Length: 482
Ligand SMILES: Nc1ncnc2c1ncn2[C@@H]1O[C@H](COP(=O)(O)OP(=O)(O)OP(=O)(O)O)[C@@H](O)[C@H]1O
Ligand SMILES: [Mg+2]
Image 1 (tube, rainbow, N blue to C red):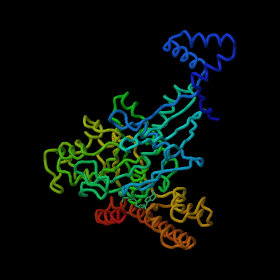
Image 2: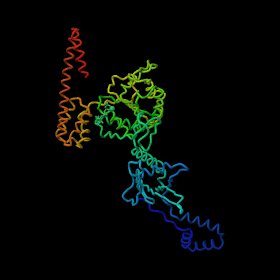
Image 3: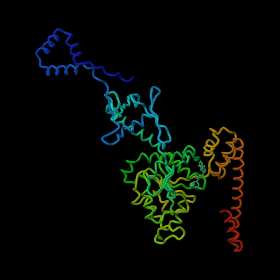
Image 4: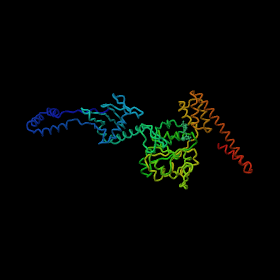
């Protein structure tokens, strides 16, 4: 239990009580009163007070809303932190919301107390809001009271814990934005932070919970992001820029863009969508990248297409006829791990491609992109996430699901295709039967295509001996590519 409040005694009452205990003390009292000058007498009263007032076990720290002329970070942190600590014993609350906020802000009313426990001790918070009689001077502060013996712990680890938790709460409340060079201004009351960029709120609902992919791979990505966030000091120590690069590759509709949105929603990082075709040259690229903000994800989608527009490094001085861009791969690489890579803090680069094999080897060199993530066709286990997202079925308790999983594992079908199928009807049975026939059909088409390829291979072998048949083999191969 929290220690009870102190008792106070007036000095003269204490003195009288003490002095009346013995005749000797009576004598002292009369001597003091009759012969001792007032100043000296008050000094003795003071001594008695110090001696007899019970020692307080508690210490109270006052946390004002201002620190000098600046806001007090500890006050703001406490305000944020205590929102989540309001218990049933609190009698009066304050609630508010600005137009740009999505959620209500709840805090305690003046005079209300909150008891918080940390490690194995308890502390008590009281919110104080006092006004001068005219109402022109307002003082807002928190009183934090705890056992004196815990002073070091509270001032050290407890207050650090309050600040860290409040940062986490703030991060979760943050509105994530999507920046683009093609958007002008902002449709958001917060405005856009980046110079030449327009922005909108990122309303993409994708999260790691809704993303259908192998659970092991998903965990690896989340762990990697978490480690990255915690490693500010590590990056400093090893002399590396605090940034991380991910290459997402795989066929269309496997969730590369959805993964980027899930990363942004998870980290509460803004996304800067970099359209290389609208960047004129390396200088322009530099300006564009430097006007991005920290704690952001810089995305270049379809980097294989961009790199056909981005010219070869040997060919840097000629302008590309097709797109008029003079951005070079070395210009991009300079920002990934060259001298310019240290711009800003907490940056994540994400490149996506449908064709990893078409990428310049310079981009694939070990250490360049920290993680290569293969977004592949859907697997049976990943399908469970889709079923839970779209049908609200938990644990795959529908009899058709097992069969669908087996079918999915034996062919190539993308999560996007399955998602489309899962939205065809409101009736779960109808939907799942539809998925079975869709995947069966796909399996049949694949095995037909494979048969054709093997026939083509035979034709190619024969064509080596017969010039006339060579054109036939090319057609066959084209068909396969279609
Ligand atoms: N792994 C997935 N998990 C959940 N939904 C997915 C997944 N992959 C695709 N989808 C669904 O399909 C839609 C398209 O996917 P997305 O745009 O992320 O694919 P992509 O890999 O970026 O494709 P592209 O290569 O064409 O850009 C998404 O909006 C989502 O509804
Ligand atoms: Mg995409």
